[in-house]
Image 1 (spheres, one colour):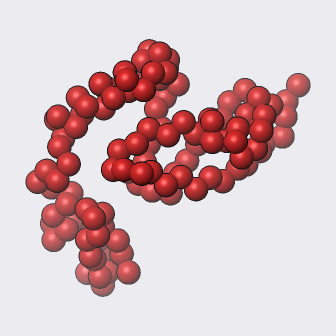
Image 2: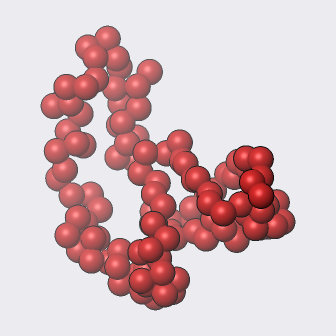
Length: 112
């Protein structure tokens, strides 16, 4: 038996620069057993630096926050916050048009 697609919109506001948020628990809090009615879920974010862990990675980490911390700490060691990253050098960005006014706000580029 197939079910009709469902949609829910959540506003997630992290308390710090990096935060792992259990979206499934948030959906349950907002919409009850909505996810139980479906075999698969599709998540998307309007924020370019937000991301979702693939279920297989989360399973390999046993869904434990201490293991998630170890996993992400390895990336933070390789790519520390406030590093001299090429994509932050807005004057070198060729995908932005000349007519676009670009400004940097907390390390993110916005076009006006």
